[in-house]
Image 1 (cartoon, one colour):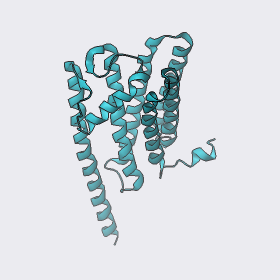
Image 2 (cartoon, rainbow, N blue to C red):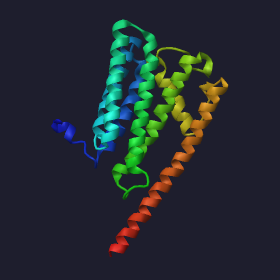
Image 3 (cartoon, one colour):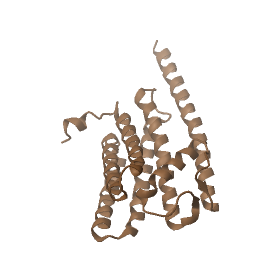
Image 4 (cartoon, rainbow, N blue to C red):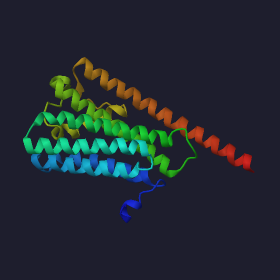
Length: 229
């Protein structure tokens, strides 16, 4: 049985809690300037696990994705424990892959629930914000995976543990996604440049898709209301 606090997350407000969790995960990455690197690793892992938990509670209404995402969280926890106990740093790449797949699954589940379906609600609008944050997070994890295999991919981000580069990767990802392009972190290798401009393209098209979805839902709602009259 779910606790009373967990039951507060329902299909009318679930995307609010999910978006808030994603924001706090991104904020936690900025703590690298005020705490030591060792503690940052555990703080980020705790915030990541909490984010996973809130995502699962928020998406428990979508049974198929809920089961799949639950298995990913269990696998991620096993990877974290194995890395911590055995000290095998290479397991971090498995953790990153599991995180990417989890956020991708979360993205797919939310997208099915809010785009071009039903009437416009505040929860759906917040859900569209969650989708945008998930896009940035997925690309940030993609950049971390790229840096792991090709250390010279970026100027301004050196190869290191994922928790050491997460803040910079997320910063570059959202700067690229919003097409701001400050230029303090630059893609160097061709594959990194491809990743970057593809993210910029997705960011532009995402806004167009969200606007068209809201317009479509608004027209459908208007038509239904006037037919009923």
